[in-house]
Image 1 (spheres, rainbow over the protein chains, first blue to last red):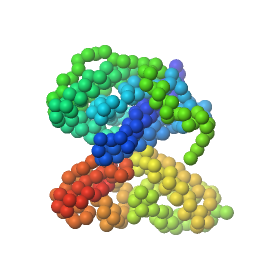
Image 2: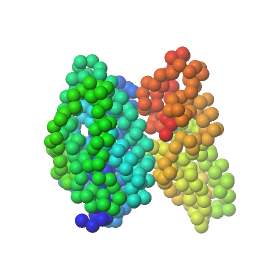
Image 3: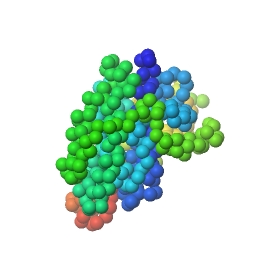
Image 4: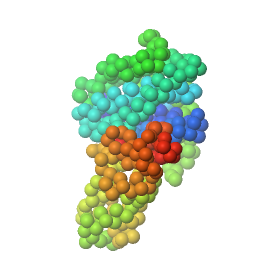
Length: 252
Length: 155
């Protein structure tokens, strides 16, 4: 893999993850448990889709084959997507969605922090912009997780169940794929393994303030970064892409 | 036809008439998203820095800018989006901040929370939700007059 190809693949990892995560979160629109949460979720989804435009836009530029962010989002099939598996997990209940958001936000905030120092100026610029947004998302998802975990017996149990279910999907965040191995040496991107300790410190709040038991299993579901996805991604893409597939080039 | 003789300062005045589509009491200039205006040959180049990367108002704003300039005879307009340096609420003008407050939106503060209720001026306030009706706002409530209000998030 040459450098450009590695860069393209790495940008797909970021852009596909924000895209699929954004789509999942947007599924809550009109279904939130209370109006404020509904609005908050829609806003977060919007930020994630906005970040997707930046990452996939740059990916298309790097690839240099005339594909823009729309073409990459709407006209690729599941095996070409490079998102983290955690992003395509179904929403489950509200607690599960917020737990997924927190685990993801913590990783995303750390990743963007590192990318601000990327030797690639274009990546650093996007990371600065997105980093501001994600820092705000993280504040909210962290507080909500703690409140729900330290809430009623019912909410506590649901948050514990969500954490147990999602934990095996967090290892992938810290397992470098081919593009990261290639690029980390050039200083363009961080080695994700190095983010893990800080991530554990952030998520430790679930135990210290929320009273949850942190799972200790080291098993990690992998595959998203190399295009091997769970069955859920196909359904997401079917809903997201059908219009462009049925009416190619449609605009509104 | 393009009126390249229109001075840049006049173009800034025209842009000061373009309202933010979501918060029409402030202009795109007061919001601080217009970063640069210049002539490049017979083309007017305007650089815009979006507030939030997913803000749906950005493309509406770009259309409005083109419309207003066209109405004043400037047909050749190119819009550039620049994300660095990222937009910050520090770029809001003082006039913009006053207009927001009069409109009922508490202006952003570095402390991260509103100073007082834009309705009654009381300072006993509580956060209702970190997100409001647009990406740039949060929802707060005044414990004195009990009215909810929007707070322009500080970023």
